[in-house]
Image 1 (tube, rainbow, N blue to C red):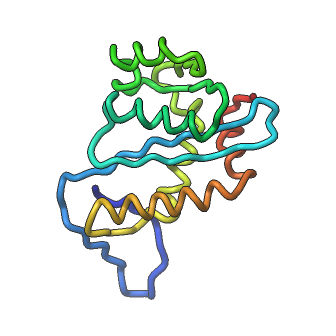
Image 2 (tube, rainbow, N blue to C red; image 1 turned 90 degrees about the vertical axis):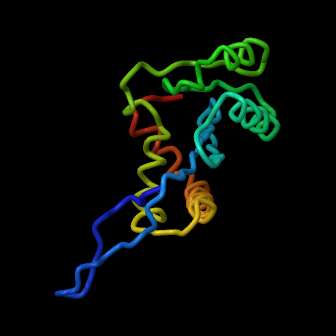
Length: 165
């Protein structure tokens, strides 16, 4: 995974150089921004996994989310392929606690998780050149814990979309 590059400070005449091992390994992340219907509280859960997400990996992550929340879930999803597979559709149809709403195509500005990803990539993940994807995942979890402690930030991700509860 190549690191997100951001502007930084350096002494005059010393251009900062970011060296990293070029390889095609990747870590994928699923962010679950959870808001109470009354607007009283927000939560953030981050699930990481080496490689790409598939329905076989995402279904247990949704079950784990339901165990943590112990409440009905309205899931707002984008057009990722594994979100709309036959296996996922069968799972969604069999769960009474789960309702799924689909975001329109090409509308990342309506997805609150895009604000989360921008926040993580602009903060803790910026200009990092870790040797393993495990280290990248650990930094992402640490950054998510930081974001999760700020109710104002979590509601800000929702506010930037123009959507309301």
